[in-house]
Image 1 (cartoon, helix red, strand yellow):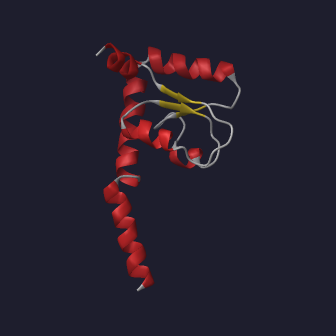
Image 2 (tube, rainbow, N blue to C red):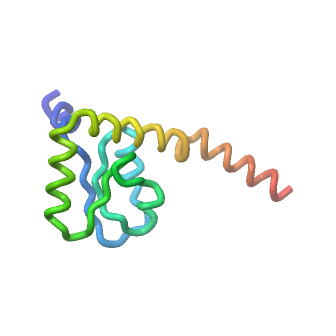
Image 3 (tube, one colour):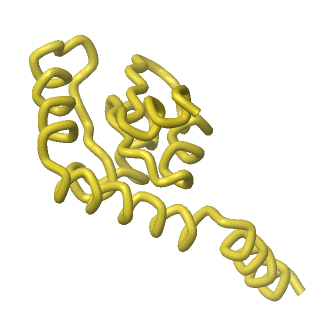
Amino acid sequence: MFGALITRLLPMKLLIRNEGLPLSVLEGMGYGLEVITTPVGVISEVITHEVNGILVSAGNSDELAHALSKIISNSITREKIARNAKEHIATHYSLTAYTGSLSIFDQQIR
């Protein structure tokens, strides 16, 4: 119980220097976590800064500290980002969205 509470109180941080699109970013957003990450690979195509996540420069500890402070201290911002993240994943990366895109692809190749 305590672990679940701590997990819910802290934003998800994933500071990477090179990766295409980490599944952990999609999973965190899908669970409604406030994702703070670096804009490498195609992450910036999924996360819109301060709309459905927060992007910080790789290696910039000041930006990271500011992002964490903003999320932890401002419940309105935290809840907005979490809600938008979950909605974005449901709209663009859910099983329903995926199967819909497959049916469109199937229609195009027939």
